[in-house]
Length: 470
Image (cartoon, rainbow, N blue to C red):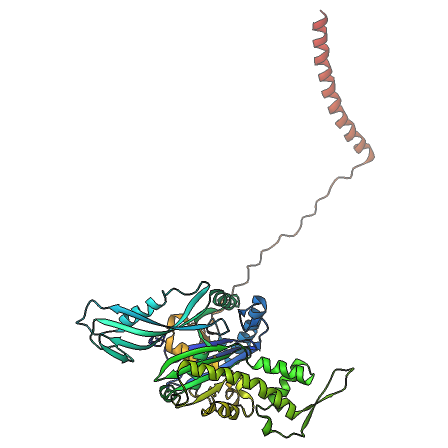
């Protein structure tokens, strides 16, 4: 899919975004209202235990089971039949590159139209990529028409030579195929696949921010994804190979607690800046039956979190510098989203190390029921963004999700009961009583029959013997 593509989905069509992450699998159901807002109808989620941050899906059965669970919950919540989904893809195997495409138009008397642009995009999908990889997104950056450069939308312009710069995103073929198989095995159709940070940006960034220049940092469980926009165009994408899960693991090892307790500590008591917490505060974590409770220092907890988050910030800063977009070009600053963005004081830590204004992006920018507290959570940015991305890039033929109330109910045809068959009354039959004399006579007559046959046979052979003797 690409930025120039136009959807023919209509308002009211139901779209389902399926976020297959390393920590959770989430299905969100929504539809576009008459005011161009997305109404969220329902949601379902399940723990993700079959997805790896590097390779994507590594256990098909576990992932299929989690997808089914999330979809069933979403069905019940939205009162909707779900048959097709838009899926996000992420992971350390994702790569991006820049390419230029050129076509020469034969009919220069006609203006450039969407078919010309589509030709350029189709040519990009034919590019040779590294073995085992495939192109999943082709994103036009700007166009050249003859000697005119830096055109955002060339439609309506007359020219012979049409060229464009493209941002190409690739993924491992096997990772894409396995993801598609999991969705199919769960009884669903894949309407489209896109890069997860692109979906997240659709739900948390405004058009003004993307025009002014902004860096989206999506901190997931296994990876941290980056997408940089300027003048409304995607300029850079990148993947950092760790996210919120590694923070939880550090807490587990540093505080000597179980993984589930480490996650609770991070979310409920954690801070990304140690200087902002009380040095003397303690929290008690209940131990196992044979072990006493563990007391954890809130200050030490913050030191562990801050150290790991500074590693992530350093990697983000390197991506921003290498992309050529520093704080002077990113006028709208940095927007944090994803489950890892829920950490207290993370915004301040980013601003301290990067010198760039930062905010936490919630997926409420384009949704109609943004007053519901459940959706004011950055961990749902990708799922909601996939719905918006589907409306912008999808096709009506690729979605067949309907509310239960909209599905026609087949009339119940009552089968008439079978006509009763009259069974005649049984007729009494009197059988003769077999006396011992009669039974003996019957046996004798039977033996007489066989004796007669033997006598006849004996006569035949005796006659033949007489002939031979004479």
